[in-house]
Amino acid sequence: MKLESKQEFQQWMFQVLNPLKPLYSQGCARLSLGESGATYPRVSVEMEGFSRPLWALVPFWFGGGDGFEEIYQTGVLNGTNPSHPEYWGGCSDYDQRFVEMAAIASGLIFTPEKLWEPLCKEGKKNLAVWLNGINEHKIPDCNWQFFMILVNVALQKLECPYSKENVSSGLEKIESYYMGDGWYRDGTSGQKDYYISFALHYYGLLYAVAMEKEDPKRCKRFRERAKVFARDFLYWFDENGSALPYGRSLSYRFGEAAFWSAYVFAGLTEISVGVVKGILSRHLNWWQQQKIFDRDGVLTIGYGYPNLIMSERYNAPGSPYWGMKTLLCLGLSDEHPFWMAKTEELPRLKPIKLLKQADMVMHRHGLDVVAYPAGVCERYGHGHVPEKYSKFAYSTRFGFSVARSQLALHENAPDSSLAFVIDGDDYVFVRKYSDTYEVLTDRVVSLWHPFPGITVTSIIIAKEYGHLRIHEIKSQYDCMAYDCGFSVEKFTDGYEQKAAGKSAYAIQKKQGCTVTGEGPQAFGVIIEADPNTNVLYPNGSIPSIRYRINKGEEIRLETRIETFVQEEK
Image (tube, rainbow, N blue to C red; front, side, top):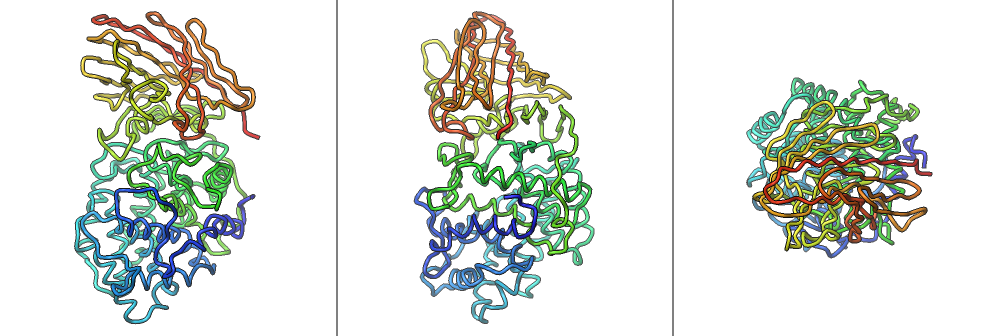
């Protein structure tokens, strides 16, 4: 699909949402898409499934489209009616339903004629009372503040009871998250990922459109920050449309590009509409080529294919539909320049770019986009935090791997990591987070401890062939250290692998990775990673160099990582 006209973008939406139609509950208030669990109860799981398609339907309606109205009018009426069997229930502190309220609030703000005006008097009262529950409980000190803000903006615009105090305190907290250079932090978290674009900027731009008259100074500030952020965020996207798989919540998939839809919806033009349209078009088309739907056309949990191993504890069967936020551009009028523009390629970008606020160096290496992060993350999170934030490199073409266990190399799948195995043990220890770090123009330096008694200083340097790793190690144990390259997809055309002497490689028609090492007893090995560990493809092998680390010695290792990528046909 070309994805240039408004009709083509609408068609893309219907291809994703139409398979859901026969799956709504009898009262339309719930949508059950699978049996896997999350940290919240079934009512919240099914209410989430119901709400998330609204992130595309609301702009679709706002832009003049028709479809799904009856389902959502009926569902909202029944879901907020305490006497109905499909009532969503009252809320409690930190309730998942607060997240899902924001989609309904967006519909009330931008398309009240679809979700508010058709309701009877009692239905309107029930909906307003149910939404106001967000003001009666605690919510996390993070991007969730925007859910409370948007709900109260909707209630205010509908002249229903709302909390002016909560709007004010929520906006103050959002201000406290701002770090400069267009970047926010997500509450107290120090890790930076695409959630900054997907949540904090996205909702800020929604607010900027909704509250232009009531709060013009803040709206201008949100827009100005998004302009600055966009210059950095361009670097997260590949020329073929894929975005950098890094960090949490990757099951929202095409939500990676939601910021660009909000960018044009909010009227920002510093980056041309043709470039923005090109990013969105290529990104959505790239995702259509991945194996992300089940046999009934329903989105699955995973990234490049269905994969529960890499999921977070808050990923329920309906969660992936949060990616529908990327279709906010459907809210643009038929005459908007976005629909008239031709899709354009990315502007010329620097091959190596320091993203200071994101604590990483970005490297556009041939057809690949690689990030070298500093290993900044929460010590305990939602699942697989070290794998999602603390590897040495993340790639749009090679992805990254998550561990099945810590018991063996093939189960740990430690691609782009320095993995330690202490003599006499089977456990694998990698960088969980960095104790200290420095991010420079072409390199990242970090001090870390894979295990008490082992200290590592790693220097990752972007090079024309890929990247160079220098490790200085002090260990109180005799152990082996495996410096691992990227995971290369196997069981595909032209695949071959070899380990000999101080090098190892895995190669096939589309991609390849070679590792070469200098250090004590350097020896090439291939780690046959367990199935379903890589986020992009289900089977991969990891070329690596094994080093001998002797107790009490100061060891220096140098590992050269070379890659090539062939353009996909």
